[in-house]
Image (cartoon, rainbow, N blue to C red):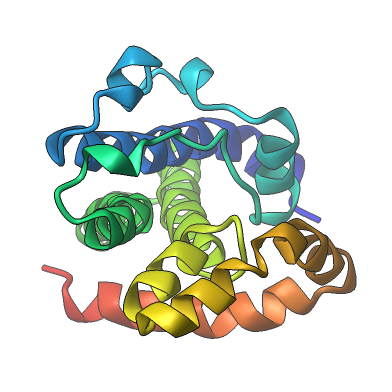
Amino acid sequence: MPSLEQVILAVPAILLAISFHELGHGWVAYKLGDPTPKYQGRLTLNPLAHLDPIGTLMLVLFRIGWAKPVMINSHYFKNRRLGTMLVSLAGPVANLILGWLFYNVLKIAAPRLPYTAFSHTLMIFLLINVQVNLGLAAFNLIPIPPLDGSHILAGLLPPRAAYRYAQLAAYGPIILAILLISGGAGLIMNPIYRVLSQLLERLSL
């Protein structure tokens, strides 16, 4: 379990990560021609527009969670299959970009700031932002409906296989709940997290 300091520092980090994630979905959908996110007020960094209470609590306590999904209408996309995949990918990519920014600030600031109580807290805050963004991206890349990874995988599969895979969507939340309770979600998520971490390090300034 995280310390009280980590919980307190995680709250703004989580609100920012969730807002960027959902804004990423909405912005790409809007740019591809779907006005639905704009009409629903999701093209904003205001966390109140994106919060799911249970998913946010999970993020605070376990670094695994979710936000309120951005609703899209794929009929607006010129290529529905590709458009849906790009919109789904946009959320994790937004978190990866934000994590990259915090990682580089941490990398630059850590050796330069004198050690004080404030600088120590600042370093923890920056590190939490990196971890939260990578964690949110990695969790959502798990290819189980309704997570983003399921839509990305469906877009990569041949049409017939994608159709069969889509039929599993009704069971996705049940499977996901079992994985979360059993700890299986972490086993799937950890390799994704490591790959994203390595990518972050290689792309750092």
